[in-house]
Length: 477
Image (cartoon, rainbow, N blue to C red; front, side, top):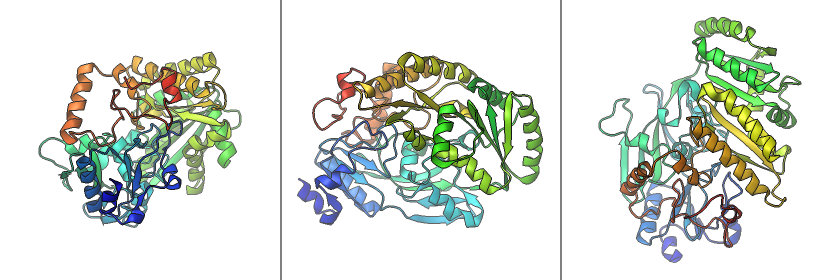
């Protein structure tokens, strides 16, 4: 069967050797693994279409993959399926400074869009922590956010149109350059669909003017609760910062060890506040922000004096996930949302769960919209180490739902959280979601086993049950 696939592409772009396949067995959620049958490396959108049509014809499941940075197992391969890697579809096809749009292929790196738009005074607003390596295709699939989503919104707010090949093999085009669309918002529907509908081939993105100036403030607090209270005070004042980020002491320790970012010594939490916009507007907001922060219980406030100091402050925050690897052999990055007014309560509860389970948790989060990113530290060499960490992660997700929040803010459901979906949605809600998916991919060949619990879920390891299945934490039932 693979021989017929090589007829579509040159043989050197259909990889079947163990060495090649090993590089694609996992994604950013390294606790999971699966060996694909083959990895194909298309170079054009038309080649992607041919491969998807081949998959449907031969009933072979496929997973589209960019840089593989998914932290929920969303780009995990399907055993006996194929991986369609999109890294060579990395062309920025157009930057239009008049209409303020960019047209790009799915393998384009997030930050490269802003770099290409910079000479025109424009930028692409979504800025996930992995923006130096994650791709636009992945951003759309998981509706990524970032530190500045409080002000600018998620990826879905910046995608005007797209071309895609559906799981059915049909080529479609939704939306376009116009901000006004007719009919159902299929472009928006694709954002966050996690690859279950098909493969995006080309995206028309909204570009925004770069801010004239930034005012970046680093504030130290003796407790997480005080930092959380400061966030409420800032929002209640009517200010809408570009970003509001909090890191706790464990995350601070990791960031300092990794990049020496100069965060306040002895802080139990740091708050990063960034104002941005026209010079006059930022100057006025700066005065208001200073008054708000003076009324909070901070013990140190530092204002970035220049772009270099601003980047140093942000470097600590952006490196937090990877930096935690210096503190623990293994860790899980979780992603949930709680209402902003329950942020302090959620953090206290996470602390209690950490003490109860004996597992350390580093908290890094987008405080402005209540998007939590607890990093659960564990040692996979210990008996049931992974299972204990996943169980704690699950209890945190359940807490988020109980508080009126969500099991994901920007990382998606993927493989890891699929069994928690029924905690958020009724059986009928999930059935409607499945019907929508089937309309685009009637044979369910596109990224099966993700998002929805059920029997279509693939095996999670190369030999029998995955440890999490044995522990009863996840299942295919």
